[in-house]
Length: 112
Length: 112
Image (cartoon, helix red, strand yellow):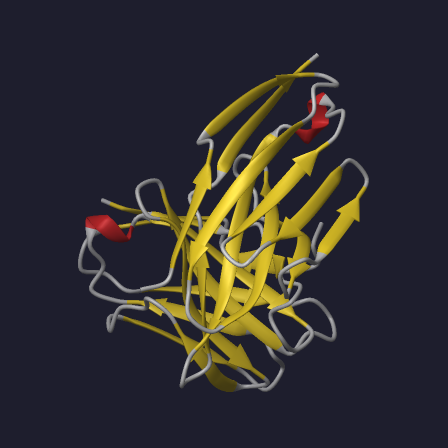
């Protein structure tokens, strides 16, 4: 158990819908990272937050957005969902920098 | 464009049969190289961070090394519980934050 929690574990929704994925980092960690893992694309970095502020952006689509709240939990919002958005979404946290990231168990999103 | 490749794609070893996994990278502004282990359906588990060519790190049966163009993960006398997918990732500095690029992974099976 990494200490990072993600909810929900599974999510099934229809194309065009909007969903919110939630992540609670390990106690004391200030940085949160979001990743998407699909069979054909592998693990892709989406975005990083540090202490409530956006720190870095990767391959995040404009339909996706994220935020980190004052209690340090983070949410990833996915809108206008497409079939290709079906994937495992992981959240990771670290104390500050990315040197040692701890990953959560992931949320499996299925878009039908 | 930042790129990470890993070889072999899959590797089957007998218990006790040592081997090496390769990670080759092309990135400008390398900040760090990471190795993770991922079990099926779970989040990646952090193993090592390497920062500069010539650096080596060890943990139990695993040893990671780094050159200017590639990294190796050496597995000595592996056991069945070492079976997993091993992911290599690089952190590249950007004008805005950083970018993390993961390789496709090497799927390791250790047979008893």
